[in-house]
Length: 181
Ligand code: PRP
Ligand code: MN
Ligand code: MG
Image (cartoon, rainbow, N blue to C red; front, side, top):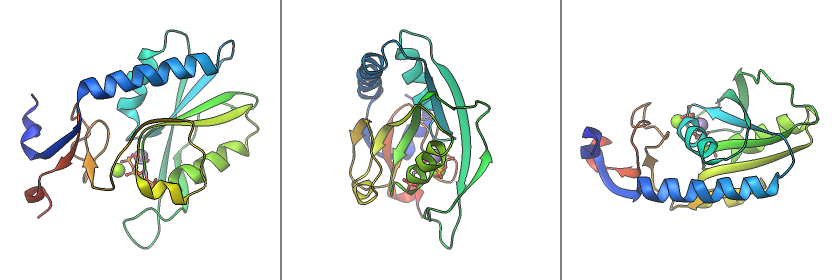
């Protein structure tokens, strides 16, 4: 076990849970995009682990590109106002795009991103997220591939951070209360 496991309150998803579900999602994607070229677009930084593992569960070629975006607004919560810190290197005109995310919380990040990508004239844009919280239901963003619906508690690991830490945890977990104070 990793040393940082000591900071964890409860493991929500084990490595086996995560990898098993990603294999299923990869199979769904292969079936849905049979005969088509797919571009996976990861959202830095949280999606790094999902991208690495999901893409390696695919048995066919895909292209991979990344965007870095930043929500800004009054609070620490995502405001829905987003700026691009790093844009795609790829021209997505007429491309089949699958956006890869670690989590949809409010849904504001992805609803902005999907409409931004749609404006570039792709053949299609779909979303694949490892985790989805209940609040996401309030935002009208269609998500085709969901790994797990989870409760609204604060989770870390497998790409998800608390103040930039815990991204390298191999599991998805809630933080021990003493880590917050
Ligand atoms: C997190 C997460 C999603 C987004 C979800 O990213 O990785 O990208 O928030 O929140 P939302 O649905 O409420 O918009 P964050 O902005 O923390 O950046 P990071 O990926 O670099 O951690
Ligand atoms: Mn993110
Ligand atoms: Mg974050």
